[in-house]
Image (tube, rainbow over all chains, first blue to last red; front, side, top):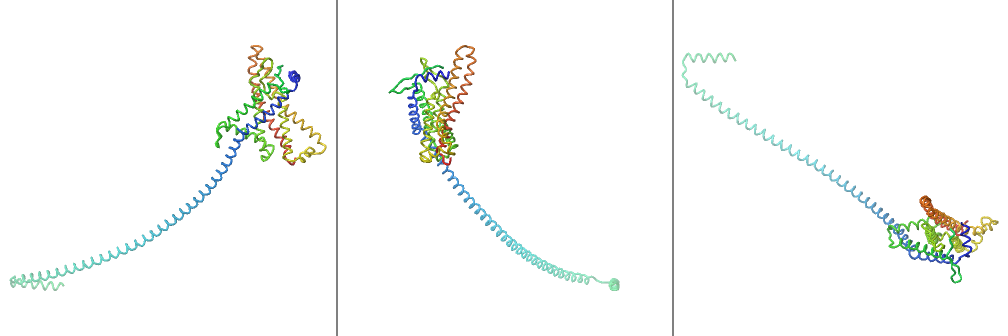
Length: 171
Length: 236
């Protein structure tokens, strides 16, 4: 079958016009592809390559910037923390001294109050003793006058004297 | 199978009109595919553009496996056109054959030895051209006596052998595929029972032919770049 086909082809002679036609067609196809498909596409691909490269560069730069910012912020946070620590220490110290002051003031006040209360109490006691003494005196006078007012008979007098003597002897 | 060819003579040059037709069809299809896939090009590719870029990258991979891209970039377009043209040509003969008055009109252009040999000659010619252009005439000439002097005749024969094998390998694969397709088709229409048998056979063989057609397009392009790299690479 193959030989038959070749024989037929050979009988017709070599149709070298086809060969020429194909060469020309192939070259034309190549030129057309270059103009309409390959050229623009390669351009776009190159552009994309450059774009990607530049984007990578940009991303790298942005990353570095972000890192720097992060470091800055960390530094700032650290400083702020230290500062706040300092504030707290100060406040604590201040509070401590204030506490001492308040306590000592209160103690003094209490001392003072106690002292005055003591003085007052003493005063009151002295007053009470004085009043009592006066009353006792007046009462003695009253009793004495009453005793004196009473008429003493001999027997009673005797009895009274005996009683006093007895008491005196007992003492 | 014993189809004749619609030959004619124009300006004293013999033409096989079927070849002319099929070359035109193949070129138009290749151009349309490439053209339609490269409309509305964008940095962020979608659909068709992705496909064409994949083809470009594939071809680039073929070239890169043979030479560095600095040398190979200039062959990108050639390799792209080759692989697309040969692939489309190989596929053309698969769905049907079409003959008028016993003359076969529709077939793969690559099922014609003349056309595959023309392509092979073009490619080998280009390797010589670029060999001289990139390395200079002196180094190109001395390249034939490497690695050893007495191998020179073999090296020269190799050039012709390369051309022949490059062209005939493609032709043989595609032509054989079409012949078998024709035989199966003949079997299919000869009787209803054989027709039932022939249908899956046809499908299997067409699938295989798609595979062979793709592989042959790849091999042709690959070998083109191999020969090219032999000629343009220094230190060989």
